View 1 (spheres, rainbow over the protein chains, first blue to last red):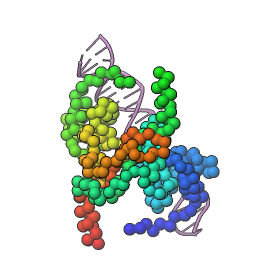
View 2 (cartoon, rainbow over the protein chains, first blue to last red):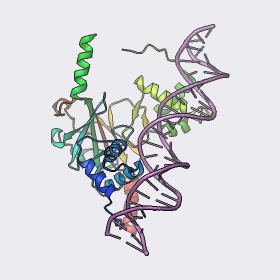
View 3 (cartoon, each protein chain N blue to C red):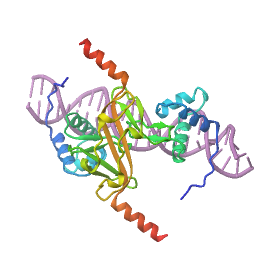
View 4 (tube, helix red, strand yellow):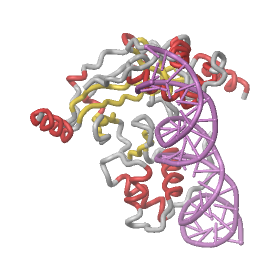
Length: 139
Length: 139
DNA sequence: GTCGTTGCAAACGGTTTGCACCGTC
DNA sequence: GACGGTGCAAACCGTTTGCAACGAC
């Protein structure tokens, strides 16, 4: 069952994890790569991808692959949902208790055994709401 | 606001729509391309993509881009949720009323104005449950 | 006849991978 | 020193796009 590979705590792995944990946004691999490069100018994008995959499989971070075509990464392991702005793609967090509990055992899933659910909201962030209002009043 | 382009009902567009409507699975563009080729051997994958995008923008079909890295397409426009098998990637439908209603206006979304929600379940389809059982009993 | 659509093939963009060198344990 | 990890670059793969010919209206 469990993998028996001993992973090493390299400078790259440590800084990638620290950087992701240090932000509240949900960066793409490329965005994180650019952040990490401030401390590790010679790091490669491949290393960022490899570490994000490894850290995900170890349960240290989360990979969000339902928020668009590019994967995003989340250093916050507390259970929570996400909301994405349909205009600027900004992704925000939603504490789990702001959403009514869904009883997974009660979901009739046509032969499926329900294991997990992914609940993603979309909407307009505060900033884009303002933008839309000012555009409307102009015209 | 509205686009004013007159779209033509080409043989390709009609067959792509009919084929998608005729299946209850949620094929990827490539899978649909292979189905459509039985009737249109010379159709191109690009045409399939272009029509799926156009049909989506016209509200004729739905594009599911949260079920994995590849987009899937759904000809069933009745509101419903999806459940994906974590093992074989099969995607099933879930009538909306099997899931407790979520009051979107009640969701406290940190400055966001909630417009929509995407609720995707994952689990094990009946077939993969059986497979797992037989594997467990063997060992 | 107009102009939206097609087939083809090349381009694109995010992600993965093969490889020789590097550095953690 | 063994072997997991890295930087680099090329490969990969789903999707998009430019273009000249085609065909629905």
